[in-house]
Length: 131
Image 1 (cartoon, one colour):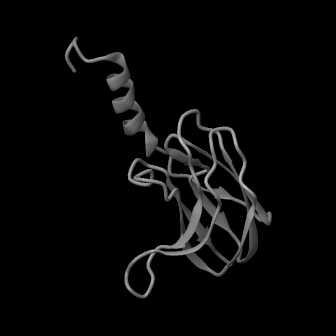
Image 2 (spheres, helix red, strand yellow; image 1 turned 45 degrees about the vertical axis):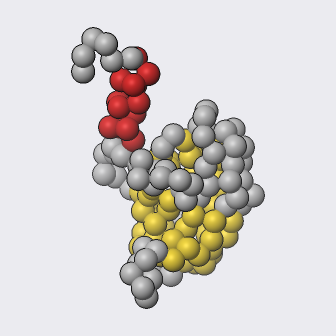
């Protein structure tokens, strides 16, 4: 980048580059509750492995600037598009959503913020359900 690039633009480029980065490891838990944090533009933890059954999602927007939500989706429905099975309400920065509950069967689910293009900016995750 040139010397005339504003510092804010440089920080935005760096943030976008780091948003999807991870070390490839997944959180494995047997607990029936998942505590997730959403910020600009991540879901933490991003990759999770759980057992089948009822799961409660406790979600907080820890970001400083944007509203976020969390949707639990089946990645590919009958028409090839994701199917939403539950979603939190939209949270302002610093807010915690009313927990949502989902009964999970073995398979892969997508965790995503459905606001604007947040998922394209890296705000998504994978929830794998294994016996």
